[in-house]
Image 1 (cartoon, rainbow, N blue to C red):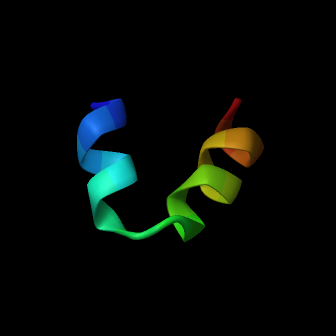
Image 2 (cartoon, helix red, strand yellow; image 1 turned 45 degrees about the vertical axis):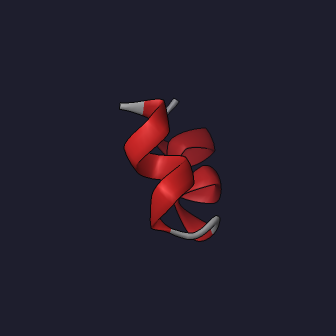
Length: 20
């Protein structure tokens, strides 16, 4: 899933941190 997130753009990283 990380690959998809990284491929999306970069904003997902912030979402991941929030979800974490």
